[in-house]
Image 1: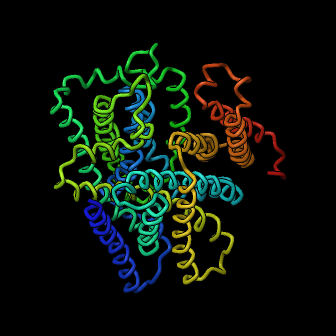
Image 2: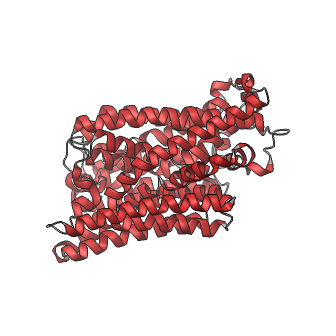
Image 3: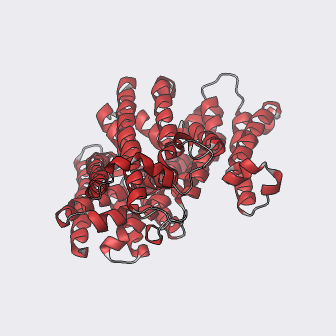
Length: 493
């Protein structure tokens, strides 16, 4: 069976790499040559459909719609919605309302926004945080894709991670942001089909066993559900509240969504993109993973609260369903969908890292010395470097839970306040600097204190049990830096 999945993977890879080369050749044949604005922003001419499908494909990744999203519903039952899809839909509503505000200042990247409002130092301070967050995120996506694909390709996990990174690096190098958006359209269709088929496989397997009517009762089997709370609130109030605190502010200024909204033709197209992405997220990040997760609870029930070893704590539910219940004729379709899901967010994260490194750090430092030729080399080189960094991180990854909370928490504690302050009159540059520095240092400091167990005795039991107290402490540091900056002497700002 390995040859079927190899065929699917190679077919998909040829298509997306071919798209990248097509964009590269079109640029080469044009009269203007390399255009940095076109490479990073697709010329800011995206329609609502293009931007919306791109956002959708980014969210319908192998982790969100596949590994992590399904895993949450397996762990907590229907209440797992509070830990991913509900905060994401609230975020979509926030973006829809704030589109005119976010697009009011004619800037493309968030560090560029801070430079325009608070000076070049703010740009240099924000860019490293974005580079770190999206490198971690990209690595998580490569890891999630690798553990899912490796058994079907019949090769080692590191080799699978490398192949995924290689394909993404190739089309990112040649086509830039335009290639990311173009491949996202294909990835959306393939991933939507893949997730739908997987949900159908789970439900069909239950029907064959006469258990479809028991789907809701699967909530009683969820191994991590809090027994003192109803199914709809199964994670418990502490974890739900901390998740909303960790996710909502940071996601509301999430850079990959921001970039697509800035690349849209106008405010109306940007809002259309959000509506489309929100609807797709509800279906393919919410409802479909819910059906798969509940089906898996009945098909592979925990024994005495212990998840079956073959599921690897719920991370390999897709693998089990495909191996046990997928008809052979479906294998090629599922293989292509799996390959698309594997790359749909890796390219997005790598694009943010490359943009932050080249556009927001290196290009401003080089200034006028950077010729068009060197600017092109820098843009393409950093695109490859970004994927390479994510690949290296993926080699040392073993938990999506930790990664998503830390990275999203950093967006909340480090990025949210300065970006929102850029739209407020009267905020001093020192306040933005203080929030950026205190938020980043504080979050990382308390994260490691939490991991080493040194915070447990200083926190209430309900907070210590979640393992997420560091986000509250990091947010407090960010607020403290913002407040202290108001009285910081201007000459030191």
